[in-house]
Amino acid sequence: MSAGDDEQFDISDTPEKRALRVRLSELREEHRALDSAIVALQEQSGGDALQLARLKKRKLVLKDQIQWIEDRLTPDIIA
Image 1 (cartoon, helix red, strand yellow):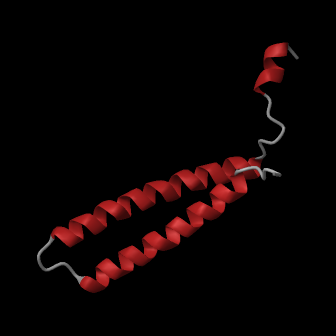
Image 2 (tube, rainbow, N blue to C red):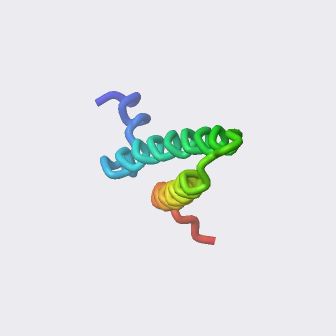
Protein backbone atom coordinates (compact mmCIF):
# COMPACT_ATOMS: atom_id res chain seq x y z
CA MET A 1 0.00 0.00 0.00
CA SER A 2 1.42 3.38 -0.97
CA ALA A 3 1.27 6.61 1.03
CA GLY A 4 -1.24 8.04 -1.46
CA ASP A 5 -3.70 5.27 -0.64
CA ASP A 6 -3.58 6.15 3.06
CA GLU A 7 -4.42 9.79 2.38
CA GLN A 8 -7.65 8.89 0.58
CA PHE A 9 -8.83 6.38 3.16
CA ASP A 10 -11.41 7.70 5.63
CA ILE A 11 -12.23 5.25 8.40
CA SER A 12 -15.43 7.12 9.23
CA ASP A 13 -16.75 6.63 5.68
CA THR A 14 -19.01 3.61 6.01
CA PRO A 15 -21.47 2.04 3.56
CA GLU A 16 -24.27 3.44 5.74
CA LYS A 17 -22.90 6.98 5.43
CA ARG A 18 -22.50 6.62 1.69
CA ALA A 19 -26.10 5.40 1.44
CA LEU A 20 -27.27 8.33 3.56
CA ARG A 21 -25.43 10.80 1.30
CA VAL A 22 -27.07 9.26 -1.78
CA ARG A 23 -30.50 9.41 -0.12
CA LEU A 24 -29.84 13.00 0.96
CA SER A 25 -29.09 13.96 -2.62
CA GLU A 26 -32.31 12.31 -3.82
CA LEU A 27 -34.39 14.06 -1.15
CA ARG A 28 -32.87 17.46 -1.97
CA GLU A 29 -33.64 16.94 -5.66
CA GLU A 30 -37.25 16.00 -4.89
CA HIS A 31 -37.52 19.02 -2.56
CA ARG A 32 -36.35 21.32 -5.39
CA ALA A 33 -38.81 19.70 -7.82
CA LEU A 34 -41.66 20.23 -5.36
CA ASP A 35 -40.62 23.84 -4.97
CA SER A 36 -40.97 24.32 -8.73
CA ALA A 37 -44.30 22.49 -8.82
CA ILE A 38 -45.68 24.62 -5.99
CA VAL A 39 -44.64 27.85 -7.70
CA ALA A 40 -46.18 26.70 -10.99
CA LEU A 41 -49.43 25.71 -9.27
CA GLN A 42 -49.60 29.02 -7.40
CA GLU A 43 -49.16 30.93 -10.67
CA GLN A 44 -52.22 29.26 -12.17
CA SER A 45 -55.29 31.40 -11.63
CA GLY A 46 -57.43 28.41 -10.73
CA GLY A 47 -54.75 26.40 -8.94
CA ASP A 48 -56.06 23.42 -6.99
CA ALA A 49 -55.89 24.39 -3.31
CA LEU A 50 -56.00 20.76 -2.13
CA GLN A 51 -53.17 19.74 -4.46
CA LEU A 52 -51.17 22.77 -3.33
CA ALA A 53 -51.66 21.81 0.33
CA ARG A 54 -50.54 18.23 -0.41
CA LEU A 55 -47.41 19.42 -2.19
CA LYS A 56 -46.53 21.76 0.67
CA LYS A 57 -47.07 19.00 3.22
CA ARG A 58 -44.83 16.63 1.23
CA LYS A 59 -42.19 19.36 1.02
CA LEU A 60 -42.25 19.73 4.83
CA VAL A 61 -41.88 15.97 5.26
CA LEU A 62 -38.89 16.02 2.91
CA LYS A 63 -37.38 18.91 4.84
CA ASP A 64 -37.63 16.89 8.06
CA GLN A 65 -36.07 13.84 6.40
CA ILE A 66 -33.25 15.97 4.99
CA GLN A 67 -32.57 17.46 8.42
CA TRP A 68 -32.56 14.00 10.05
CA ILE A 69 -29.99 12.69 7.56
CA GLU A 70 -27.84 15.83 7.84
CA ASP A 71 -27.84 15.39 11.63
CA ARG A 72 -26.66 11.77 11.23
CA LEU A 73 -23.86 12.76 8.86
CA THR A 74 -22.60 15.71 10.92
CA PRO A 75 -20.20 14.64 13.65
CA ASP A 76 -21.06 15.64 17.19
CA ILE A 77 -18.92 18.47 18.45
CA ILE A 78 -18.25 18.45 22.15
CA ALA A 79 -18.15 22.03 23.40
